[in-house]
Image (cartoon, rainbow, N blue to C red; front, side, top):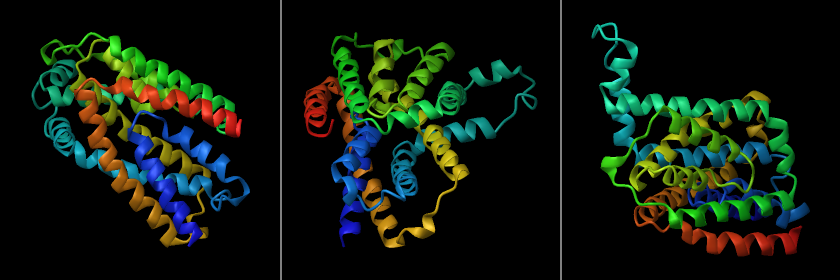
Length: 278
């Protein structure tokens, strides 16, 4: 029963913090530090983390199913050779095809940083102090969005340069305590993108990023069979359901320009966590 309760709790933490701009990885590090030796999943932490990430991947697919469907149809439904057009012209003739290209390009710096700096990031997962500092930095970045000029959708100019810059930010967000959603949306807003486009691009970017993290975990070997399937299902289900609610909530808050309000949670949380666990 204790294992099920921990699985449900960590699923809720993952579901909330994967989408709300407060850092899922940072909160899981703090949760595991708080449990200490009583943390049941200490030996299967990577396997359980894999299941939680899969649980939060499904809400993104569902929430943006229309955009994803359009991107797939636009990309696979025709060919630049069949249309006798150059590749660049073919990509730019359809906005969904162009968006798909930008998502792929934004994933490149994220993937490179994840592979080349893997050891550096993994060391940070063992430092409560580093997580608390990163939470303070995330709060500062979110607070800066309060002063971002509100862009109109007609002014939106998502291009290759901006996509690559946001991809670099997503790569840095592998650091526990740096919120992936918060940092990428905040930087997109500060670069002049409108709120709707900033949120949409951030979460579409998360799909290959999460899938890539899952592939790396599987490559390193995951012993799922050693964990009770009911426990895994509990974590997966709670992460999926809570994650969907958190995703809907965050998109609504971004549309209203209230992203900076999470600063008032992050800064006190970082200070309390450092004093308690640091």
